[in-house]
Image 1 (cartoon, rainbow, N blue to C red):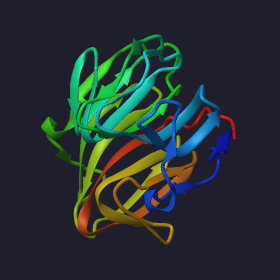
Image 2 (image 1 turned 135 degrees about the vertical axis):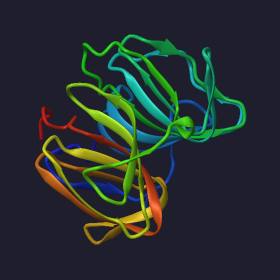
Image 3 (image 1 turned 90 degrees about the horizontal axis):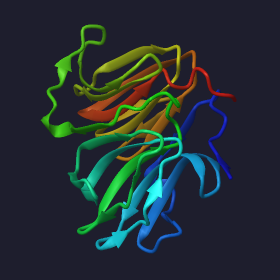
Length: 222
């Protein structure tokens, strides 16, 4: 299966336009944003757990990165409420579940093989600092290495954003809205721009809060 598998072109998914599709586990559904492979895949998805659902224990062969968007996601290590950002390196394993139900944004099998640093941050507790290079924006760093930078961002109402992306970038709207390429992006809408692109966007009238990842697409095949 291939979905938005050409990383050299712009890709956008508006959550309201795609249906939830079942996973192999009852009560767990997903919206596929990009994917190369079948059930074992390099994948970016929004995943919804019904209350009381659980996923079998599994190993993350290529790592797992996720942000809890709503509800509480849990595994053997404890509960992770909305806003929690997690990186589980290659070779880690868990048996996730959700007692009350949850929605997560998750990226699978996209780690550098040498990245062995686990991360768990409660994003609402992070202070966003004004950005010197982009007026009207504030950011909080979630993760950074030689390959990629992951941030939470807040754009002020009406802020004009212009940003070069030599290594490409991904953006997931979390609250508010922004406009780019003639489209409006609202919560759970996703945008991916290829290496060498320039992000030209404008925050909506209520501003925008979003998750961003940049730099990570430079060494991927088209």
